[in-house]
Length: 294
Image 1 (tube, rainbow, N blue to C red):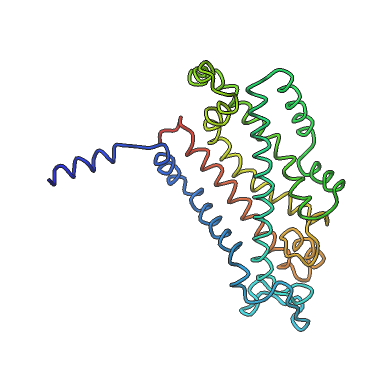
Image 2 (cartoon, helix red, strand yellow):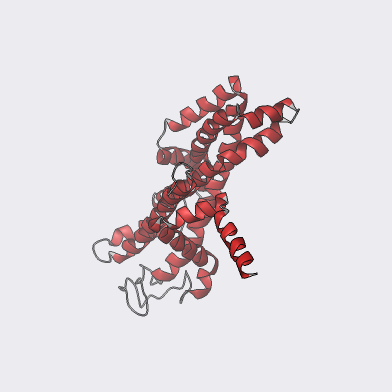
């Protein structure tokens, strides 16, 4: 009986699913694992930060204006005596929400356009790719500034702007994968037996592109947060008294010489968040690459 259980255990160990292989290779990427832990911590702050902070985000204390970091105020206070630690923690929800919304919209739109361009080709491919080329001609931040300048300031328009310049990247990525897969044996077989184009696109071709989409999604997340913070820093995104990181950074630039911590802590939050998503993207890329056996 024991020998039978031992054989079953050994057989289970030999069975390696794609997911288990991905997890095994991802665990070897120490930087990516640390980045993932930090991102999970940020998600926790986004959901529960407002309940654990010691002060309200707009709780003014004119007797504690521009006080340095202390046990009472871990990150110090701003020009209105508001606790900087509480505002940065509560600002996590805004930054992650903007990143999630913008990149998700860009990924969905880009994926659909990439599938159509790669599968049908011809004039559909030409139109979609030329539009992407036009968007790629502008630096991402400049394009976002132009869009927000047209639509007006506000976080909703920031999400739209970031989504617009994220779409071409996903479109080209998925188009390239579609061109590779559309002549595969299983796709040709599905087409010959009368399977609809929609089913071929979303049930046969799209799954093959998902690993690349996941990696690009993770890396685009960090850049979207950085772009949104840049727009808020320029006064085109979040408006006072919203505790958005870019806006906090903008408000603190007037006190660089007298209270440098007002800019250091929001800047550090942006830096660590963007770095974490980039490291996570690198780790996922290596873990999802079938060419890497170790």
